Image (cartoon, rainbow, N blue to C red):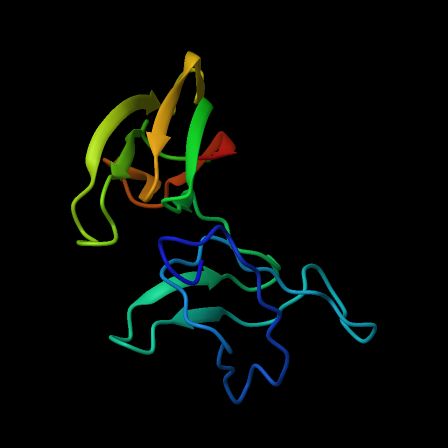
Length: 177
């Protein structure tokens, strides 16, 4: 999004990733990046190395595409002031292939005023999972959780173990105000 008063916009950035690329337009949040594989792309995914989006203003890493993934995998979304989001579903899971049981607490967090501050997020919902039993949980919200823009929605996790894979997703319906 170029600013908090404009709906989501996309930008195609073309060039040599080895030398670095610059976006043509400014953005207040990046919640999705993906690689378009070329005819000469080989192997799985569209990228060999890590692709990082770094803010020009303060060098904050805002998005990352891991090698061979071809896209970001971030549970974060920015809502502009001209839209309202309705969250109907939240899903979280953990995977731990070996060793002792592990647990992770997933928190749905919302920043209700990212246009004036970027670091304060309120906890709206949480899910705790343990790797010994069912390691996936889904919350369905009926009625949906209403989140008015501008806002940032994200899921963050706190695990009690190293080498624990966590995944989270949410479904949103965006409505123009």
